[in-house]
Image (cartoon, rainbow, N blue to C red; front, side):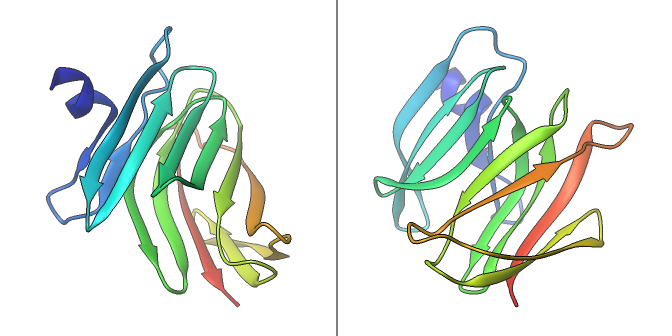
Length: 137
C-alpha cells in the first residue's frame, strides 16, 4: 500500500497524481483503478510511464512527478515536476492538431502522428515545475 500511495493516487479534487522522479530504483504498479479504467505506472529518476487499459498515455524522460492530471475529450492538463528539462510524450487522438500551453504561454500547435503520440519539450521553472495543457485546436 505504501508504494501505491507514493507512486500513484487521486487528489482531493479527483484528479490523478503519479510518478516519483526521486526514486533511484524503478517502482511499478499494475491494476490501479481510476474512474472505471485500469492504470499501470512505472517510475524512477530515469523515466515515468503511465498506461491506461493497456494503452500508452504518458511518458517523461527523465522521470517526473505529475499532479492534477486530468484527461478530457479535448485533451490533457497537468502540473509536472522534475529536476531537469523534460521530454514528455502523450497518447492522444490520431492525426489531430493540439494547442500546447506551458505555464500559460502558448508553445504552438502540433499534430499527433498515426499512433496518436505527441512529444513536447518542457523546461521546468526555477521551482522545478511547469503547468502543461494540451487541447484540441
